[in-house]
Image (cartoon, rainbow, N blue to C red; front, side, top):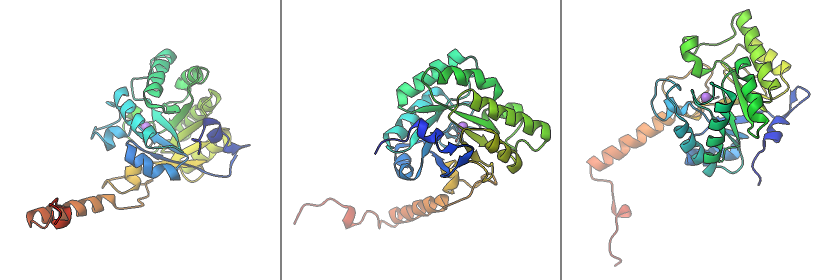
Length: 270
Ligand code: KIV
Ligand code: NA
């Protein structure tokens, strides 16, 4: 089979309607990508890897080198999904030229098809610059975690009318600038509905209601690897419990000398 293309994702939304919602999950490693790929239209190498993989307090310290290493691993582990990679904080905001140099570098290093960057009206010129030079862009508006120090936290956005109007204007600007799809994060259902209606390109929600044209979650959250997750996360599994259980059993068997048994032991053939 052929890998999912940018035009095929863009084409999922026709005259404001999406028949088949877009399925997206994050992936940071080869093996996880292999397991998720058959079920997803898009895999996102999110800068959430800062917290999920590296234990960082936010996505702010994530580097382009981290995105390159994990992006390459996810491309190696996938064959069907379109793989997008996050531009980390500080690698694109300064100018369209800076963004192009960073995005070209990460696409060359990884083989990803598209980059994602956070921001609305302020990033419109950059999105236009990249798309006219061969780099497909995934937008990201609403709760933008790289702006945590400005926003003061990770609370839901667009509760208040003026803020909702600004986020809608951001979404429209991102679409008009040429993004082929956008993530809308952490907004009230009413605002998500307005965005999905106003914007011609597919809108992929996270904590943004069922009114969107697709959904994304952080895979480790969805799998139940973390104790604390936001309200919008649905846990499809208890991976933390399974891993802790396996580690406990292994520890017991090593201490009681029941592992390794003869089955796991090399001996001369008799
Ligand atoms: O970094 C990330 O994982 C993301 C998704 C949650 C959209 O940006
Ligand atoms: Na991100």
